[in-house]
Image 1: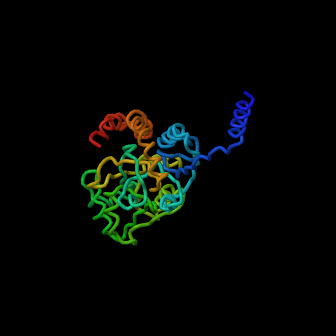
Image 2 (image 1 turned 45 degrees about the vertical axis):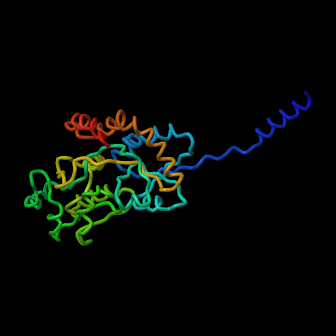
Image 3 (image 1 turned 90 degrees about the vertical axis):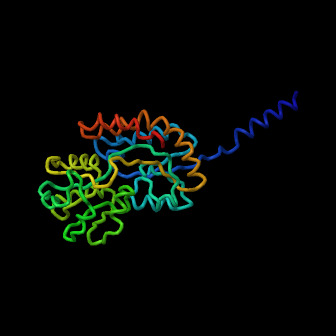
Length: 286
C-alpha cells in the first residue's frame, strides 16, 4: 500500500510540474474594410466579418488568437511567409493567391465592386454607359482619366483581368490603412475623377466623412457578376491547412444562417430583402 501511495504521489507531482503544452498562435490579419471589418468609430467591431471572426475564435479554442491590423499589401506578404501562421477572413480567391494561400469554402456572397463617380463628372461617362453599367476597359482608354484603387487589393478575377493590361498612367494605386477613404477625399478635391470600390463600403465612408450620398453615383462594371465571394485564407502550411479544415466545418452553418443577415444590414434598405432572398441560393451546387 505504501509503495502504491508513493507511486501515486509521484505521478500526481509529475503532472503538476509538467509544462503545459503551448497552443499555436494564429494571427488574424484585418484592415478597416467596412461593412466587413470596422476598426474605429461608433460601429467598431460590428462589421459582418468582425462578427464572423468572433464566432470562429470562440469555436477554435485549440489556438491562441491575435488580431493584427495590416494593409492589404502587407497582409499578402505575411501570407507568403512559410514561417508565419496567419489567416485573413476577407480574402477573394485569385489564381495568384492560390499559389501561397489555402482557401476555405466560400463564406459570404457580397455585392461586386464598381465605379464610383461624383455626379458632376457623370457627363464624362455617358459614351461608355450601357444602361447603368460602365464599359470600364473602353472608358480607361481615355488617357485623360485616372482610376483610383487600393494597392494589392483584388476586385474580383473579372475586374482584375480588365485592369491588368492597363498602363500605370491611368491607375492611381493607394497604400495605407485608410486607402479607400483617402481615395474618396482625393476625388472630392478633384484630384481623381474615378474610384474603384464597393458601394456598401463607399456608402459607409462617405457618411463617416460627412458627405452626401446624393453627390455620388455607383456604376456596376459591364461583364462582371453581380456577386463575388469572400473566403477565409490561411498560409499554405500544415498549420494553415489544419485551421482551414476546422473553419470549413464551422462555415457550413454560418454562411447559410448567420452571415447573410450580418451583411444585409449594411446595404441600401431597398436591396436588403432582395439580397437575403438571393443569398439562400448562393451555395447551391458549390
